[in-house]
Image (cartoon, rainbow, N blue to C red):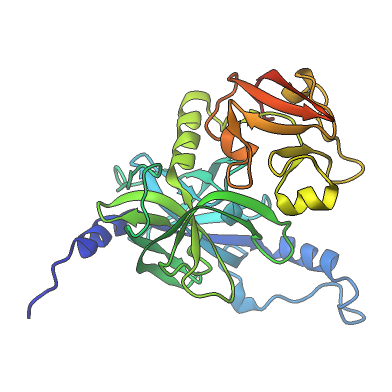
Length: 351
């Protein structure tokens, strides 16, 4: 019987040993306390706690509450996944290798801006297989890609093939219905099938290089998935190597990016830029003692340009800061009422 020979099959075969499944668990006691807090009036009279089925409790008194995916990027046991996969500080995270070997996960860092997290396990049998990280700065529409992950938390090492359908996408996403909305920008769009549980798995090109971390899907739509460019994660890994934590630059502004609709609604003088304003009455639009505050930025100012580049909905302040480090100097062109001026800002470290 003849076997198909394809570079895609080779890529999948080589990548599979480095893919991991992440199981999210909580203790019975922790779950019972959460249930009592969230739904105290729904328990029957006389019941002090809601019973958790015995078959759902493992030998360690833990209950599985979710799952995700990840992939090994260093033979010493460093793993990348999504921040939202390991967001619960009260949960325990267990890593299952493709061989079935089980490890407790140590959370090294959560990226405060990108949906990226760095984990570590201690290998028990020598070095681990690791995936090579590619470059997400020179991607093209139509490139062939492969998504690998733990689909629906049930189907281990599920593979789907597709192409890059879009670049620099921006979406508002939720990790779950009770979580706050989070804006995600600069994403890769793909038609490779990404399902719940695939979060944290790699998007791989035909050379076997990781170009993204699978992050989100659009419910109700078909073949629309979003992936975090791997270069964002590479910067995080470099920070971990140099500083032991993820080091992100801080400007210190709350703002809304202006488009033609906002210009018309607020009667603004321009149809681009970032309007400095707070999101709630108790928030500061310019954080005290931040770089923006020290540079003289005020509420209702409009930041027109950053380093000579016009700020638009396609290229926001956040996008521009992604290319800068703590201590970098940037120049902002600002409009205040009828006057325009330029100011220098030294980026500080986000705490």
